[in-house]
Image 1 (cartoon, rainbow, N blue to C red):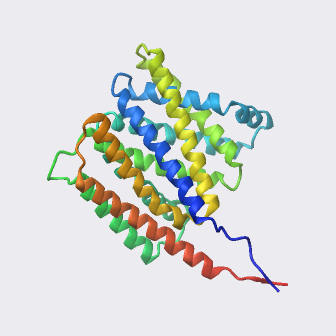
Image 2 (cartoon, helix red, strand yellow):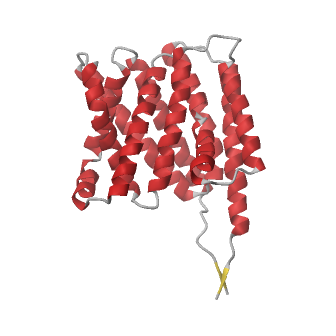
Length: 299
């Protein structure tokens, strides 16, 4: 008799969860774009993560009571520092360049993460990965079009955000075998909030009740987006839901056009599609490789 582990066989469910995740993250970008530059990027990021701590307080109390080994704590602290740089760059970019461009450049995160796993974890860089990374970089050039238009400080900030977010995910990958998902998320919210507090204090400006409330909605949308993404990954292989991520760029472009009068840039859509296509290919190829390497257990 041959037995295998249960297959993930709910592709429709995975797609619906990923659609919900995309809408949640578009809500995040839209609200931050709406808030604009009235608040410094550091202050906005601090308030957003402070709300995250409030939402995750029950889980956080349990984590702190239980305690953790020194290595775990150092990894959590390292991730918090890198994530602070990422979110500050992201908030800065979001207030200064079109929503669709922020979204498209953000698609580089998994590509940079792939490079990071090669450099820091010694994972093999197959020809498929090399090809997909090269295609993704071409997609980024289509979005930015250096030499054909001005590449602003907002674009540079979002590229830096993509690099730092990839670094944060590398810490998360290292922690995944040591701590639960709840602990990782809760410690990230606490660490980022504490790290941002002194920086926010240096640039603090008066904040209205409406701004604080909107940033609470940002925190709720971000939390919901990550939850829906986790449910999508649990329902079916990532290769099934990854192409749906491209719809997030379509929604971001429509939001920028309808709410902020931003022109729909065809180059941004094409470049974003190229990047997502390369990421989807990496995901599909590696998932197929893993399936081939599985040996069924015979009882």
